[in-house]
Image (cartoon, rainbow, N blue to C red):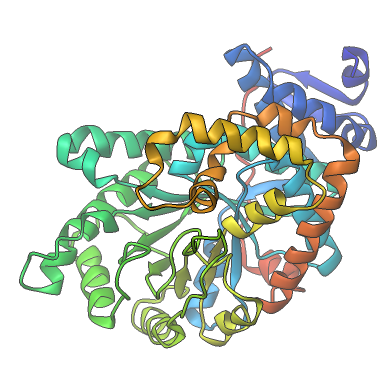
Length: 447
């Protein structure tokens, strides 16, 4: 792309971006986002991401908080479950596929998210992630609120036990970085601090709700004017025992007792029998998981009726069988997190060249040999580790030829359609537009 073509379509004056040719910008976006992601100079890369985000806002794709919709859910469940999608690799291409299906099916209730751990191993800082998502919205012509979320902004227990203040400050720094990148939805996860040695459930949950409150107060102190960031809490570490009504009440009552902010939590993540990524069998296949939908039903109704939350959140669900997804709207689940299943479609696609896949797997076997657990088969090791193959090979993934990427994206689109249908988010654009307050936060571009 020539600088001249960009100047013909975009004007940056007094720190503000204005568009002179919107159709040209859509076509230029492929090159704009590629140049930004792989720009080697930090300050220049940051500026390019900011320009892309401002272009998106000018085009009508506005980063937003889902708070208004979740408040509506807290009053009356609308019968659908919001999919929250973690994109670990090929982020721009995958986001384009999501937006294509969203436009086709009139989907407004969907979230793009990235977790603390994923930010590290996929080598996508929050500003890059939000820029890629918004660039994809521009390219596909999606307009309206775009929900971008920090998933599992988690206090890591081993770091916390070593240096409590440093770990809390790290999470605060991540929250600030994400909000600056226009993540207006933040999931705080301090469930790692639950202390089961205490005699009462309230005391077991105390470190969880106290640190959730501290971090939520920090979110409120830095959220942009006019925006109420949607904040999620969590009571059961994913992969542990199933959550109970007693734990939910102890956590939410404790949070109310100590929280000094205005708006509180909008949702609650619980454990119902799943595990992130699924349970991998020796041949590399995924074991069938028995999910406790009754726990989801009981807890979603509890948090909605007694605390005004949108409902409960289900993590680790993307590898569940197709027939399971109909049950989330039926049980009043407000949000479901989906990641590994999409990664599996990419890696296992017949269209991904064998030599490319093998190159990544060989790298993983050498680079992460220390993570190969005793008794683990090669298939199990590769399955559990291949999420870490996106970051080091980001440019190679991005540069896969069109004849490789296009059919893989079609496979993903088919999956998105199935999930959007089963989660009943077709035709949710109207309720999103009615309930969500869109505020365009000004950003000054220094040239």
